[in-house]
Length: 126
Image (tube, rainbow, N blue to C red; front, side, top):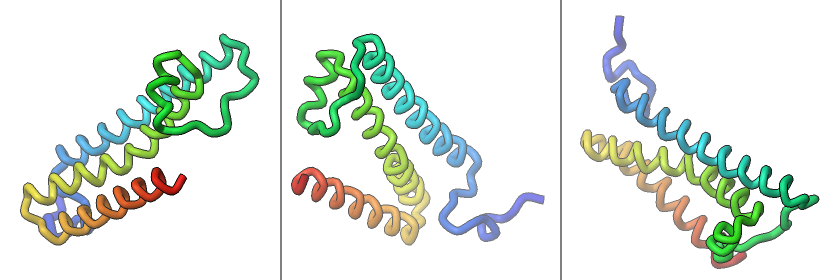
């Protein structure tokens, strides 16, 4: 027997299509991040780099990627890995807003604001 929307877990869309789409989004982000970090590891191994740089700036990322620097690929992979759960929150916000589930849309929006503010502080204070 299928549960009614009231019987499903709170905040989780009952529509299996939405659940599959969110699952695909998370899996795609994970695989893309793994691929980028793997490219970085291969570049580091081929170039004989004993290690990658400890610190790099997000503003240097385009230059590092253009010069095929291993650090750039590893850093971008980590950024994608960190952004993937945030993309899930954005996707769920869109779903909740489209379904006029304002409470869940509001909570999702609050999480997005907190993530954006934290990112802003991290980039400006670093």
